[in-house]
Amino acid sequence: MHDLTADLLAEYRQLADLCATLSPDQWRQPTDFYGWTPWDEVAHLLFFDETALLAVSDPAGFKADMSALAREMAAGKEISAIARHRFSLLDGDALLTLWQERHEALVAALAAMDAKERLPWYGPPMSARSFATARLMETWAHGQDIWDMLGREREPGPGLRHITHLGVTTYGWTFVNRKLPVPQPVPYVALQTPTGEEWVWGEPSKDDFVRGPALDFALLVTQRRNRADTRLEWAGDAADQWTRLAQCFAGEPADGPPPGARGSQR
Image (tube, rainbow, N blue to C red; front, side):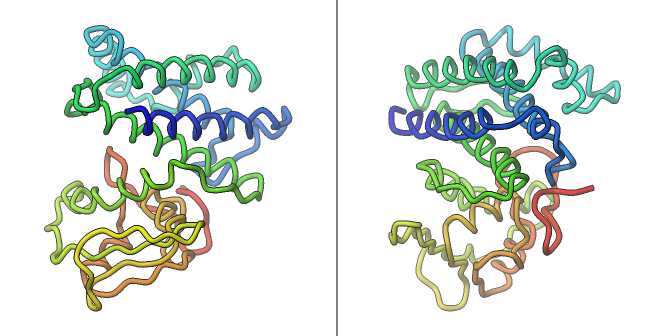
């Protein structure tokens, strides 16, 4: 868990450093992700980092909190509205300070766990390794929304490897979540890193593959870019279906942005 949690902390800190530069107006400027502002993005991360910390430290308390959240959502409240209400008294700077406290504590708690230890979450229990990877992916994806809003490119951090691996291993989930048959064969994936390395999964194939920049693949599977706006290449029916629907995160089936857009839009 040491390397993984160190990478998770690096992603948290990179986003926190960016948010520390935001002006009051920028904190309230809409992003392309459902029109959420940076304040909304950080409040969302804070909400689930708090519940994640509860899952690690007090599983019974987490389950009670999860039931309360389910009741609110069953009553018609969206998670974004629930998070806004919980942190409504905090401005951007105060929200950032609280989020930093919570995610630093969460990383420390996860680092002390065995990678295979099971934790309760929204759905089936997860291993500590999967749990930490999911928090990393969530932080990276919502951080991308803020980078995009600012019109700035970010340097890929150490979390990129974990996100691309998650994107590959959730191939089947993309289709099962939509109640669709999982197309075969699973495409060969070959991704180039910013440092010139190549990360590969599966058996090499000239007929069924996805290849291209690792960053573009991460943007695709987190649904921050349409495949038409990436430098990815693919071949085969399975790869064509996958790159059209790819979703590496849990929850209801979601659609990525249309060509030319960044982030999910309504």
